[in-house]
Image (cartoon, rainbow, N blue to C red):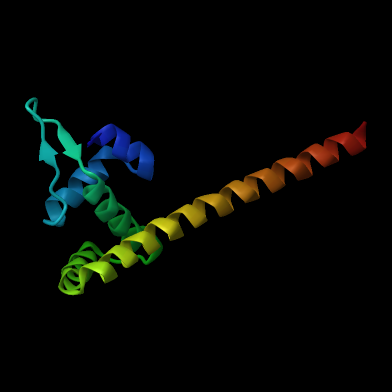
Length: 117
């Protein structure tokens, strides 16, 4: 189980965004602990990854996301798992590409500084 802070850090989203998604997308409904804190399961994390991919990468509206998720629920479970895994992998690839760009920029800057010496 994961707290809202952990989930937000993992997906690089703000808590108010996640809470808003919960109000707009009924499939995303985390349990609450005895103190009323949201607790997310691994299934919730997969769903959040899919929502984020559709919202940020595919630029879907919340209505489009809701319809897509409802349609996917009608698909066989294995296909749903494959689609969710694909979303996670695409997000990871995006992060890796950004990291590579940062490393290349740093290497270029470092080379320029050494040339000046």
